[in-house]
Image (cartoon, rainbow, N blue to C red; front, top):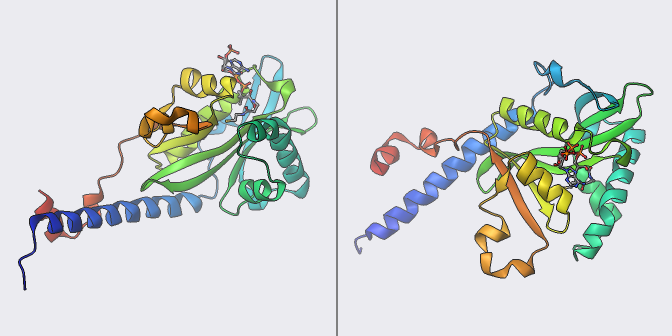
Length: 239
Ligand SMILES: CC(C)(COP(=O)(O)OP(=O)(O)OC[C@H]1O[C@@H](n2cnc3c(N)ncnc32)[C@H](O)[C@@H]1OP(=O)(O)O)[C@@H](O)C(=O)NCCC(=O)NCCS
């Protein structure tokens, strides 16, 4: 039997490391999804009263939302985003979008008027694995026009980042359309997100015109060392 080359061993080791990394990430995501009250100990974020906007803020699973709130969330998302999806060439499909935002793994942060309880803004997110890393992925941040540019979006994203940190996620990630200049500025300049390593402008820089979007992220802590779950013998071999 021919002797195995060093390269084969390296590949095997890499595969093991990747599998270990995914296992660590999966455990973190499973744990995050079991959280009962993501805003526990974040009471300072349960209300926002600035610049004429007075709202209460809650975080709940999509499965716990009322049919009325779901209709509002879907309609707001469609009204804010449909034109951009279409002009970017991604197209819009009512059924697919509903399935996406109300997926059973999805969470919502909802801001409601302190006056009449009407919902005014949302963040739609999931705890998920992205490129072998545990992340909080922001699918949507959508505000009613009447409450924009008053600091509420920034506040809701600060809360989102805290929820992610509390749940031990490594980063917060979002997909942003390049033509949505307000959103690009909001994430990159205001919230200090960076282009993610998986973003087209980073991983395929010569072909920018092929993509309508970028992926932005904010790292919350270093990615967990996968060697923690690699069997001792393999771990020693890495060193
Ligand atoms: C993008 C959005 C979430 C921002 O939330 P917001 O509450 O309006 O933003 P804030 O008031 O927290 O703004 C913070 C800063 O972001 C920047 N910003 C936000 N909206 C902007 C806009 N339309 N144009 C330029 N800069 C903008 C500004 O620097 C602003 O600070 P300033 O108002 O003191 O100049 C909100 O406007 C929205 O829901 N837009 C429609 C839906 C959308 O595009 N969602 C993003 C999908 S990825």
